[in-house]
Length: 314
Image 1 (cartoon, rainbow, N blue to C red):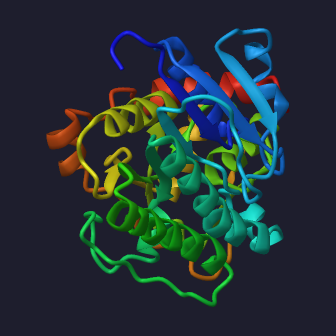
Image 2 (spheres, rainbow, N blue to C red):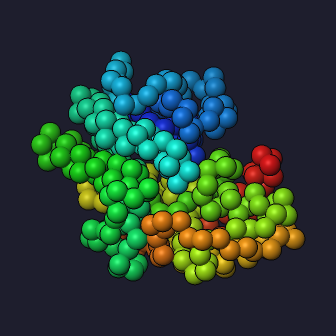
Image 3 (cartoon, rainbow, N blue to C red):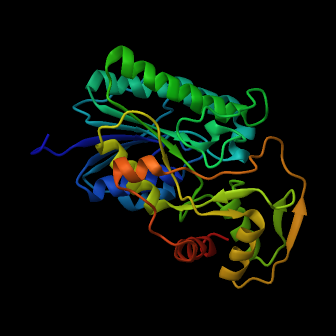
């Protein structure tokens, strides 16, 4: 391994997180094969890699058989719709990429004797009854609710990953990703950062659901990807939370965005969507201890870059 260039396969390589991961891997000397079908990804996110000899792109649905020539060292399975708007519009695709897509990606890892990492999510904790959420918490999820297609796809993906680990001795890693933000998020993806920022940039009312007392914690994308890279390179095969434990209410966050964009927007309140988690905050004790990782980018700094990106898109 030491003297040859490692090869990484990234599914969902044209997505928000997949494209940032691809950039990091290329910068650290990996040859990357990116796979995406552009259901929610965008060619804009990887256009800058065109012509790079260390990047090859395959347009394919990952739920179909993955055949690749040559050796593969790492498989990073990031393909999935990942916002409430996406999985309400694409519930079956979301379930298929979490189940069939994970099965195909694990099959590739098994065939190539590659190490596999599944991008799981804090959503597997559902609307948590334990706060903050440690990896040992099993969650409080509504299987038949509107968010069930995403939550259960990811829970199934974790179970499938551990089955391949136990049955086929595949080296596996599971990362549970908490709210992440940064450039390359889709402006209309229904998540809170693009929603608040695009409303504030246009001086429109900033829409907060419920009383705005529900909490989230926001991790800047470069911090998150560094944590995920460290997890893949570690020897730890149980789930690890990666996210920023700095918790804030939606009202506080809306005020922060209005301030950062110097907007004239006012906050307006709308009814809370079904099964919207009231609290979300990672317990990152494991990441700190095992990966020597914790977030470094302050919210104000991360928002500066994110807002600058959205100004080019609005």
